[in-house]
Image (cartoon, rainbow, N blue to C red; front, top):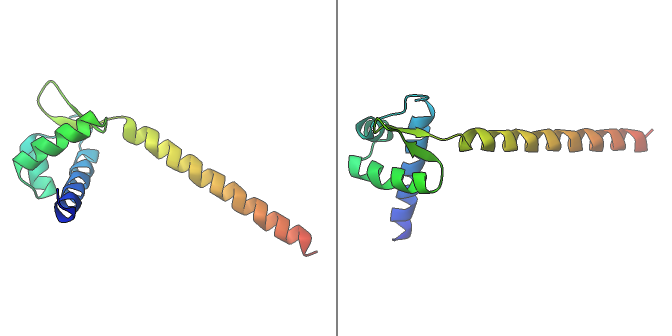
Length: 101
């Protein structure tokens, strides 16, 4: 796969995930995803299969797709990182203030 095609696939996969993020809990059909992500249904089929293999998307018994709880877990990790950064910044501010008295 060329770099341009890989880049386009990544952008389309991100658009698919973005569309699915707003469709909980019922998910979206292949056609709904294609329309929302501005891609073809065959692209949706290929990319949702890859995303499902990676644990980001699941196919429901109805044939619809939805994102998995992996997004929620990632969100908590990101928020924990922000909290750590805020504490480190507070420590730096406190240390700077104490050292310049």
